[in-house]
Length: 255
Image (cartoon, rainbow, N blue to C red):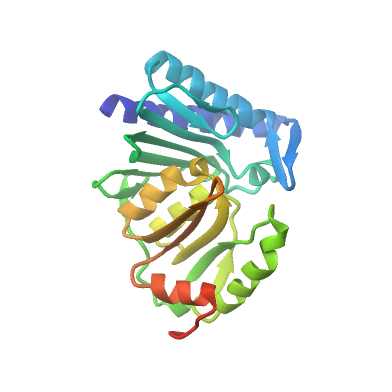
């Protein structure tokens, strides 16, 4: 396990350096679906990780956003080479490199690198969460002074109205809202106490595998709903889950 963790650290560094250099030189963009884009750098970055993994741990399985799943081992790497491609395309500095390692369906460790900020969020199961080597924990600020990261379903427009209604009700719970464009950084910001809540729907496991462990190890309360190949995530600082759920569902009894 030590070898795999050291390998993941090296991959975060290598891919982060690659992206910082490449973004400044330009890239091509293709549209995969509604508001869903991929650059040649997404694919090249995942290719770097896959090639290194094939050399270092040839029997391990890998699931990545751009090339799907390969291998049949119970040792699984879950990789998003650029979580926040639209951020990357536009020079918005919150895109991430996300790597999680799982065994038997359980996440053993997760790493989220933020190249433009020179930040590395990390966690090992039952060992706490860290930012650049310093232990982190979820916010203790009063909820009415806190921030929430809320991400409307920009690729699922038929769900926009109901989500926006929930956002309106959440203004009775939190002070203000943000959207950063990366699920991995959103969960990491929750873990580090920079925000008190994160809510997003229609995600994929490679978006959140590393971030969920980091948030959990930092003390976050987390609820996940898996449906139709998607993952919905609601994560909050301690003691805020129920009041947040009531606002989202429109119950409002505790507001």
